[in-house]
Every structure is written in structure tokens, then in C-alpha cells.
Image 1 (tube, rainbow, N blue to C red):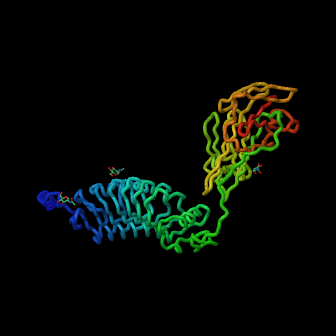
Image 2 (cartoon, protein in one colour; image 1 turned 135 degrees about the vertical axis):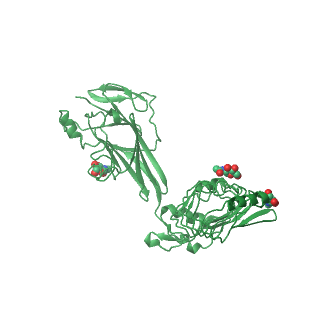
Image 3 (cartoon, rainbow, N blue to C red; image 1 turned 60 degrees about the vertical axis):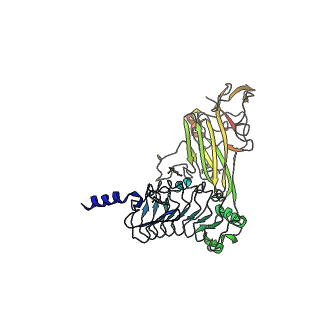
Length: 428
Ligand SMILES: *[C@@H]1O[C@H](CO)[C@@H](O)[C@H](O)[C@H]1NC(C)=O
Ligand SMILES: *[C@@H]1O[C@H](CO)[C@@H](O)[C@H](O)[C@H]1NC(C)=O
Ligand SMILES: *[C@@H]1O[C@H](CO)[C@@H](O)[C@H](O)[C@H]1NC(C)=O
């Protein structure tokens, strides 16, 4: 029983002298060192003394660092893992190492890294992750690394970096980000500006270059020409309204979100109705108003039709469609939002809109004419002008179905304040 005897020896020698068989352990000054470099290891071996402060596993064949890989050695200050075959660093592998000052993960193939583990490494001074396959770094990845002096993320596959990524690194003096395939769009312009202004030393500036778009390929970031970039702005507007006009049941409400911004912002609708919240990433329909074939949603015309041109059509607008309609535009430089509250009322009656604001209606000269209680305050920023217009598309069928001539009275709407829309519905 050789295993048993090994155990006997370990007990006889005492835990203090324990060292994994392939490694050399020793002490130098106040450091307890474990050297396991160049051993062809495919996993972190077990059996380290708990007071190891320096561990070298460089130049082995480790394929991954699983959670808990270093639980035996919580006092580690230096961890050398360069030149392995590490693809994945799992959550919980590095987080327990709250005393770590130096971490070298360079020359691996890391594409999957548990960035949240870095939030616990507040003592870290050196982080080498160069020559890996990282494609992305979360904006808050370095938020706890207030002691970090040197960061090396060169020779990866980073296409972009979020503005503010390096802001928490108040002790940083050396940064290597060269040889990444940067996508020189508006989202990277901040990096050029920051790199020119910062006191951090950033070597190899000529190799911090664009790999796309094609016309800028090879251009160093420092010589990036000015790009036409602007944060989104949105406007909700409406066609000339016709105060007092009455609408037929089943009319189509059309909101239009007019968006500016470079690059072209992504549009998103957020709709709060009595029945619940609806989120729509625009567009959800093709130009014909139908769900494109192959889309997961049920085919046909959805309840809310968001078109690529920024229009939102709500066929069969009724009580269930009352509520708050918000249009959100986002691009690399930011986002902007505009909202409108839509409430339906019957002429002569008062009521409450979806937000609980009370309003009164009264009829004068046979036309719809409405007053609103003083306490009604349109919600939303005053400068959010909302584009709203009422489309007649769809309304003829509805009106015909209701037995009236669609041409007789055009649909209209009354806009109260910049963001409260009251619609008056005529029942025949
Ligand atoms: C680590 O622990 C062993 C035994 O427990 C002891 O002999 C050694 O001196 C310790 N090393 C350091 C650096 O404290
Ligand atoms: C973070 O580090 C401390 C030691 O500094 C440790 O006690 C704690 O368990 C670590 N947190 C996690 C989530 O591992
Ligand atoms: C957007 O497209 C829809 C469908 O083609 C159309 O009904 C609507 O009028 C368009 N909006 C604008 C502002 O052109």
C-alpha cells in the first residue's frame, strides 16, 4: 500500500515541510516559495504549505483555472502562470487571493475570464494578461485595483474599450494596450484623447492602431482623424393637431420618434399599460407592418408595430393601450429618452389617465373642448418635445366597421403639455 506509506511520511515529516511532489518548496527571507515551473503539469497540484507566498506554475500545460484552484494558498502574494494553455479562468479561482500583489497570466489563450474575481484583489500591483485571446473587458473590471501600477493587456483581441475603464486605476504608471485589433469608431475616440492627456506611460503608441474600418486600417490611434460622432437625441412630435376633433373607436395611434446621433442609434420602446410593461427592440415589423418571416413571435400584425423609421403604430388603440410610451435611443456615446402619456377620454366625461392624473371634459359649441384639473402636471422633462401624429391608416376599416363614413371627420388629437396626450374618443 504505497499511498498509505506516503501518507505516513507526510505525517512524520510534519505539514510544514509539505510540498507537492513535482515542485520545490523553500524559504527566502520572509517568503515561502513554491516553484513548479517547467513540470508539464496539467493541473494545479495539491499539497502546498498554507503559508506559501510565491507560487510559480509558469511554462506548464494547465488548460484552465477552476474555481477554488488556489484555496490551499490564501496568503499568496505572487502568482506566475505565464506560458500555459489556459483558456478559462473560472469564477472563484482568483477571488480568494486578497493578498495578491503580482499576477502573471500572459502567453496563454484566455478568452473566458471571470472579471468579477478582480474586484477582490485590491492589493494587486502588477497584472500581466498580455498575449491572450481576450475580446472584451467590462467597464468596471478594474474598479477595485487602486494599488495597480502596471497593467499589460497588449496582444489580445480587444476591439474596443469602454470609456472610463482605466479611471479607477489611480496608482497606474504603466499601461500596455498595443497590438489589439481596435475598431476605430466613435466608441474609441475617448481613448485617443485620454492617452494624449494622461501621465501614465503607454509604450508602443505606433502599434496602438485601428484594424477596422478598412479606410483606417493600420492608422495609429494617436493619429486618428476627427470622426463625426454625436450622442443620441430624440424628439417625439405630432402632426398639426385638430383640437376638439373626435376619434372613432379602433383608430390607429401613431407615435414618431425622430432620432439623431452618429453612429445611428438603436431604438427601443418601453411601454407601460394597465396590462403590464412591454419592451420592444425596434423594429419588430417590416415596412408592411407584419412580423418578418422567421421571427420567433407569432406572425401577423403585432399589437405595437415598431418600424425601422422610428414610427410606432398602435392599431385598435383602446383603453388597454393607454399608458406611457417611451422611446430610448442608444449609441456608443450615450442614450436619450423621450416619453408621452396617452389617455383616452369620452367627450363630456372626466377621468383619470394611466398615471392617476384626473382631468375634466366639457363640451362647448358641440365641439370637444376640455379642461384639465390644475393638479395635472405633465410628467417628463419639459424639453422632451414629443412627436405624435395620428395616422389615418387602418382607421377607415375600423370606421366602416362602426358604420360611419371615414371621410366625414378626420381623426385628431389634443396635446396637453409636452408629454401628456389626451385623446377623445367618440362612440357612435
Ligand atoms: C511556513 O510554515 C512552516 C511550518 O509551518 C515554517 O517552517 C516556515 O518558516 C513558514 N514560512 C514562512 C515564510 O513563514
Ligand atoms: C476576498 O479576499 C479575502 C481576503 O482578503 C477573503 O477572505 C475573501 O473570502 C475573498 N472573497 C471571495 C469572494 O473569495
Ligand atoms: C414609417 O413607416 C411606416 C410603414 O411604412 C409608415 O406607415 C410611417 O408613416 C412611416 N413614418 C414616417 C415618419 O415616415
